[in-house]
Image (cartoon, rainbow, N blue to C red; front, side, top):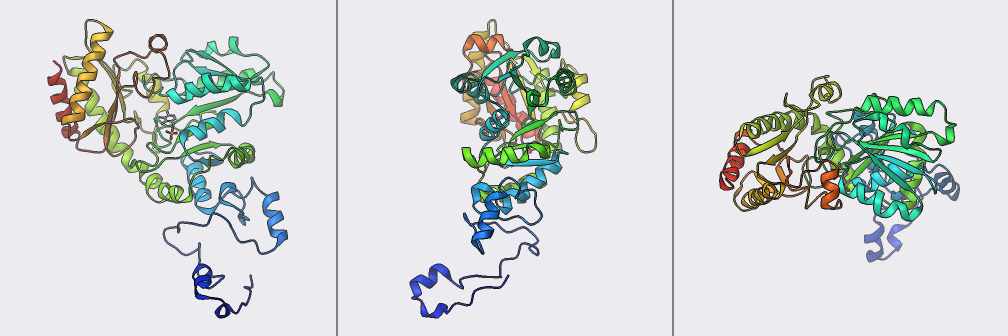
Length: 432
Ligand SMILES: *Cc1c(COP(=O)(O)O)cnc(C)c1O
């Protein structure tokens, strides 16, 4: 590219402070060891033709080896690099990043829908996803059916000609129930055999709880994976982001969805996740898992604890399924960093009141455990789904869907496990 020769010195200093050397060849994406942070919301177009070509190719810039960047919301280098890494992480063809996990959930649910489309979802989901399906989608003529999809035979009876998506999480947030991913993919593939291409049903899974380091649903037959990058992938609790990971055929519609609904991830945030979060995931995860295993074993033995759900415990009701589908990159069992437990009580109310006492004690006295929602960080976080992350479900709905009113969710970090157990022990002692 030849740069225009301008007599910059003939302009005033205040103006030159804005434009500097006018055009620079100093910028070099090829030789930085760590990719630079791009911080340009719009891109210089060498000619009107290039501008026109850039608009024409929106939706492909992220796949092209010679992309034309136009404007950040349509695609830029840091997001594209993160997208490539996320696709590698999930053993998928492509990924599209979003501003938050919820922006990604929305895109994954709606990019293929029309007015009148129907969704079949597991009965328990992340609270905001449930709220999206029940409070917002119906306003746009989209209906959601809920069933206990641990039993995949419940899918077929809910299917009609409008069904377009089957949506699950596994493990389920927060109860840690598992759904047999292969079985869901197989059940939907069978239904699709007799459906025309335009009425094909897509399988979508929220893989946030496992991260790709602990479970890769695409090779198991799932069409679309959703992530809150805010959690284990960014890992340090300093960013928000989301991603949809899928096949190339869905790349352009997802990019167009992001362009028009506007849920674009900031390049600075994308850079942070690209430079720090994702590359360290495979070393953070084993440490979190070892800690979670020890914490779960401690809780299981504690006299005040009624139930502990952790896929790594032999007592976990779906332990065999966990061992089949929750696997790290070496094929080793990856039971995750989430632990769910319920305290003893003569009634659910008593168990709930005791749990609240425990969490209040932790909020005031704990060094290693923080009362806060979110998960997947280097710090251990504790929360009460019934009144916090899952308050979109009414109390009756919670019980119907397998959420104990007293259930407590722990997201284990990378501390020394003994220190976390010491703080848990003190908190349990307090609510004896
Ligand atoms: C947090 C979370 C989300 C939403 O992600 P945000 O980044 O907070 O928008 C979606 N699904 C699951 C399972 C989550 O834990």
